[in-house]
Image 1 (spheres, rainbow, N blue to C red):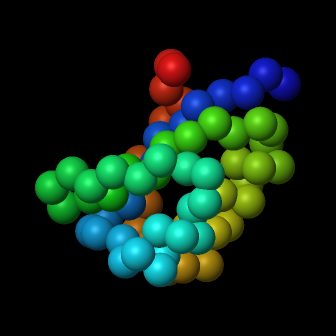
Image 2 (spheres, rainbow, N blue to C red):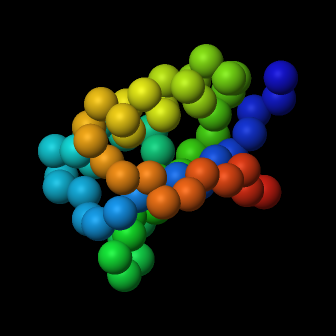
Length: 68
C-alpha cells in the first residue's frame, strides 16, 4: 500500500501536552477545530491514529484522505 496523507479534524483546541501525542503529524488550529494531518504508511498506522484520538477522548469531526 502506498503512503497516503490524511487530515483529521477534531473539536476544540488541543493542549501542548496532547499535541505532543501526535509526534510527526502537522497540527494547525482553525476556529473551533484542530487539524491533525500527516502521512500514514499503512492501515495499521491509520488504526493506531484513530485509537489514539479515541483514547485521548477527542471528538472527531471528520477524517479524509487528501492529496499532498
